Image 1 (cartoon, rainbow over the protein chains, first blue to last red):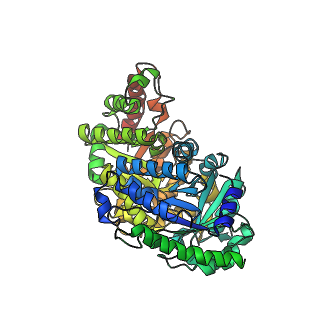
Image 2 (cartoon, each protein chain N blue to C red):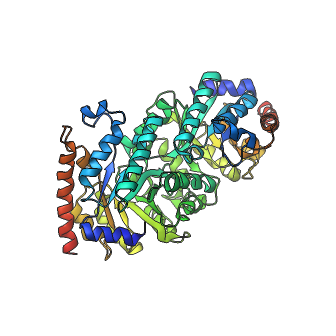
Image 3 (cartoon, chains in turn purple, red):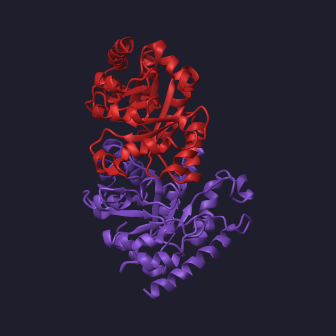
Amino acid sequence: MTTQQLVDQIRKKKSFLCIGLDTDLEKIPSHLLEEEDPIFEFNKAIIDATHQLCVAYKPNIAFYEAYGLKGWKSLERTIDYLNKNYPEIFTIADAKRGDIGNTSTRYAKAFFEELSFDSITIAPYMGKDSVEPFLAFQGKHTILLALTSNEGAFDYQTQIIDGTELYKKVLKTSRTYENSKNLMYVVGATKAEYLTAIREIIPDNFLLVPGVGAQGGSLQEVCRYGLTKDVGLLINSSRGIIYASDSANFAKAAKIEAEKLQNQMAVLLDSN
Amino acid sequence: MTTQQLVDQIRKKKSFLCIGLDTDLEKIPSHLLEEEDPIFEFNKAIIDATHQLCVAYKPNIAFYEAYGLKGWKSLERTIDYLNKNYPEIFTIADAKRGDIGNTSTRYAKAFFEELSFDSITIAPYMGKDSVEPFLAFQGKHTILLALTSNEGAFDYQTQIIDGTELYKKVLKTSRTYENSKNLMYVVGATKAEYLTAIREIIPDNFLLVPGVGAQGGSLQEVCRYGLTKDVGLLINSSRGIIYASDSANFAKAAKIEAEKLQNQMAVLLDSN
């Protein structure tokens, strides 16, 4: 998917919502546990109920890997279902991978080709030759961790390196990588006040913003400092939407929560 | 496995060799492609031929993920084969994972419980609460990326942060994490001259050292600066051993290459 196709979808749906599929057998409604593939059935119901309100889904790969082969199968079925039924949706493998060149190429093939995701999240620690193999895939997007929303972000990311914070160094350096036009960045919503400085370095790139809701970030704050002329934001919400209810009506409850965010987004887009 | 059990195995075998299972369908002998599970059959033959010469195996998870469900199945069969037949072997999931708390716990469960690996490689970028969930598993080991052997290591790892290089900051900070006794570190052999400074910060922790052979590091150099009283080193070789030959005799050829390294290690251990 091209960035323009993503922008067009955002304009059409008046939404820049990404729904995180952090699907956990201990949290999904118990009646689903009788199904052959409860994780897929849960995801399918959530997707069917919410796809008109969001522009992206983000399976958190750890949640699938934790169930071994069965989990991997559920992940495969979920991405296949999305690509077949809702091809306009932008898909994100939240995998946080990153390794030396030929190994990164393997991860890229796993997620871009084998599973046909539109994008993947990547850790920057190993530098240029760990990131560029992902960037080499045309029509695919590499979402680099910059400033995350967790407490540990202060261990290294906000420390001063080469005269600037490490996360800014990552933003600046990654812009020099080959095919850097395929870059997006993870920026935690809990640190909205950092967005002005971030936008000075990367005025146009899309930001994937976790941490609205469960992690305490404010949608209005993020938009104030982060919106661009082409929107440039994907706001992720996971637990607040998918676990809105554990009753038989869980999908409808999820839709209601997604609608609340989409309504706010429509207002913010109109006034932008 | 405890660190002491690993040290005992090293002393007994006079080897601190780790063999990397970067198993690639395009590189394994073509006669294996007729098997139902060529990747597992290749790994099994390599393991059977070399297990007395090494103390650890390190499947590179990307190589398995790239083949989707089939690859995950081959990985599962490989680790099960190792745990059942050679329980004295230290197993490393070279996965380079790392995410916020509850997600890191999922990855830890995937590799420590579901697949029963003894250890996993982890990226430090997201800090304390992304690493500690792995450290919480007793009898398991978390191998944190410090200084990697690739060119991109110079993008961030060797930059000065808080008065010291980022990789040294990672070494120092991670020592303050809960259960830090379960930490080992990745240090690339191509930068052996850095080892003196590294040993000043972490005098005892085991180092996993890739880059001997294919990436040009010297075993003697690494040992001169990196050996501790309890050895403290695992030297990894992947392609140089497992792809020594693509003939029907590939396992025997791998054994010969492993033997060369083990012989050098025996001399280095005796003179330590």
